[in-house]
Length: 277
Ligand SMILES: Nc1ncnc2c1ncn2[C@@H]1O[C@H](COP(=O)(O)OP(=O)(O)OP(=O)(O)O)[C@@H](O)[C@H]1O
Ligand SMILES: [Mg+2]
Image 1 (spheres, rainbow, N blue to C red):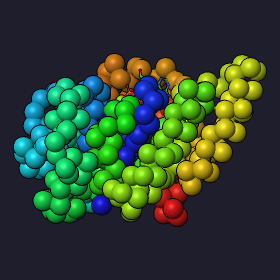
Image 2 (image 1 turned 90 degrees about the vertical axis):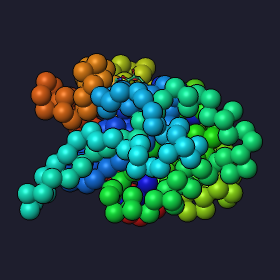
Image 3 (image 1 turned 60 degrees about the vertical axis):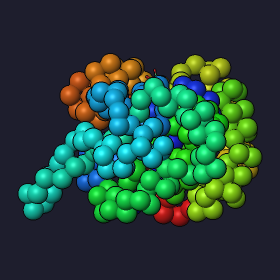
Image 4 (image 1 turned 180 degrees about the vertical axis):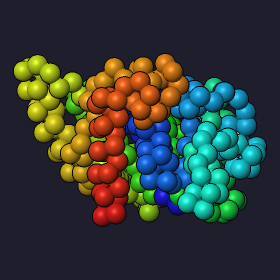
């Protein structure tokens, strides 16, 4: 089982969109069994997965108020080559109480590794899923620490814009500390550029400037800047309106969706990269 956290402390940089697209790609195109975990009190990944916001949620799992398997809800099933049905995509949803997670864990000495405890208490999870993808809120709190405590890989999403590159810079020390103190096994998979506007001369000049900065920051983090980037595409907001994954939306309504094309290409690059890091 491979566990990936999608994170940046900057808001609105397509963390949730990326987490769901990665999960859907692995389930739909690679035949993998994927568990999504939403640890963001905004509950965007839960809603995007067309699931109700309710408990038990990741809040209950992190606080040890329920067993991890009690919070898993099925999104999609598929049939294997022997005709056997299996869960291809599932989620542990979020609920708004997660916004106060830091307060709830204020007096817990193990408050940053509660999710790891929940995983250890249910080793069968390893047999049920090939990938776990965790979506975090844009903050440096217990949410991302708990997510990184169980993760094999961290994927950082960012815009090629100043505020976003500054946010990556501010992540370098906290991530290095997390690797030292909480999870020495954690590897940084790389930085993915999202919502890239590919039109206009000035935009492309700015893009190249920010791209250079992002390359330098990736080097400082000891990871790659993925060659593939996700273009800004109307189909993303359209699929979210319909509570569909980008791939289901593209196959039904938008066969030329650049976001679907880019996420497929990115996932191929991502899977190749994590074999090497
Ligand atoms: N490739 C894209 N093209 C166009 N719009 C996009 C793209 N990716 C994401 N968006 C839009 O950007 C907004 C933010 O995306 P998303 O919710 O995935 O970001 P986030 O980093 O998870 O945000 P938050 O920090 O609030 O959790 C959403 O409205 C989404 O529809
Ligand atoms: Mg989000």
